[in-house]
Image (cartoon, rainbow, N blue to C red; front, side):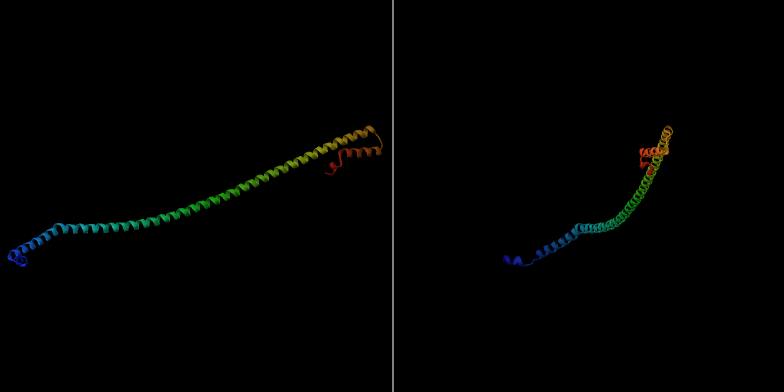
Length: 173
């Protein structure tokens, strides 16, 4: 009795099922138009935006790689330039060192030459002093010879005595 009604399709049930199905399709298409299409459009825009950002990121990466290569090249050039500057400084330093050594050698030669001149002047002065001494000794001898008026034997003895007073080293040098 009640079981027939549950399983049986009466016209009322079929009519309600028909309108329910039409309402579901209308609801589906309406929601699809109002919700699904805007969501699809939003997803498509987001997909394009992400693709654009990936392309920008790739361009930025490429640009960064180019800049890195450029900076590395500039760094190499700066390093080469620094090496050249250091080499130039070393070369100038060695040239200055050679110049200073040359000047020092020239100064040393002038000092030695001046010392040699002074030694030569002192030697001449010593010779002049010795000549003066000889002259005074000869005068002294002449006085003794004249004063004593003695014979040759005494005169030879006086010369020998005078020579001993002067010293043999004076005559040998």
